[in-house]
Length: 74
Image (cartoon, rainbow, N blue to C red):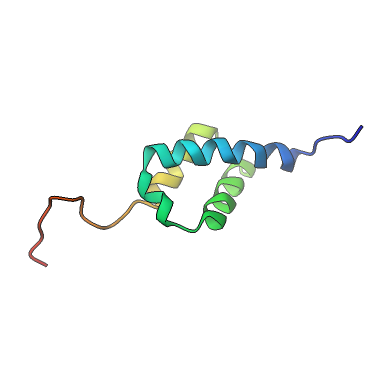
């Protein structure tokens, strides 16, 4: 029987965290999935909790466009 490595455990958590991040900010769907998963794995390896990782991902990748229905003069 093969032993599951720490990296494999972290990667398996990555899918759950990515889903939570997409639920928190659906605009993340327009970003490159590979870079988002790499960012999630890096945060998990640094020791952040799952909730903190979701907050960091959403905060860092927040869309800079205005929400629908908002007008801007610039």
